[in-house]
Length: 308
Image (cartoon, rainbow, N blue to C red):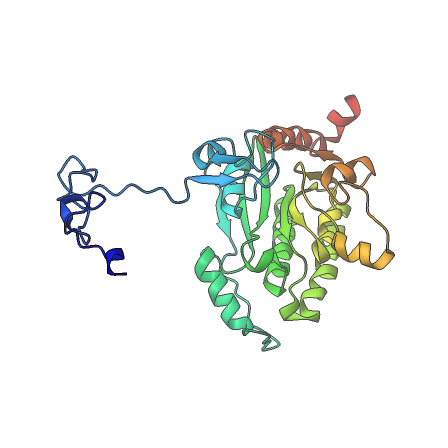
């Protein structure tokens, strides 16, 4: 069956008869930049599929829309620094960024906790899963915290607990409102009971804020679960969430397997929790900063709230 073998030295599907031809600067088919060098067209990461409506979107359009789907309004996750840039006035100052976990239990599962920390620190450029800043929202000076979900799922260990405790102390010392944006899978299992102790420590600090009549606002984003929901995420004077955010303690699949019942549609989503009284408001990302300014006007000035 030798007739199957290609003998033509210049087939029509191989320009110039050279199958190893590099379609670079010398090729008449390759794009060339103004200086004559080969132009490389980057096509990766230009498109993104919305998990809400499954539409393929131009990524630049999504980013220009505050990382919200232009078709269905699905809110994509954003990083802690993006959250600060979105809600705080320019010129805010990051504080307490030098704390690092010491791996108190020398924990190892598939990988060691130390290696997980190193990988997360390298990929995010952060020391742990929370950033604290001193800045302003509108005309209100605030102490602001934002959680970073890409750092081991935004989980709370000793460092995150200490950062929030320090933020509370700053809020008390300066008598400035505290605003925390949550995005977390819960307590960090690699630190065991040390991570669980942070729940009580933070709750005690928030009780001091309440006694001092200093406002605390919590903004819950997708996802906020586990020990975060069980502690400071639900202790705000005002609890606000973004649309469609997953908020709960245990996951819906675990609950279904436990109670052996089908959960209602939208269970543990922010709209469902608002309807059942767990949240005070569900606010789209584009309206969040004006909403916070208005809320702080009332919370920081009780007389204005009485008149309203």
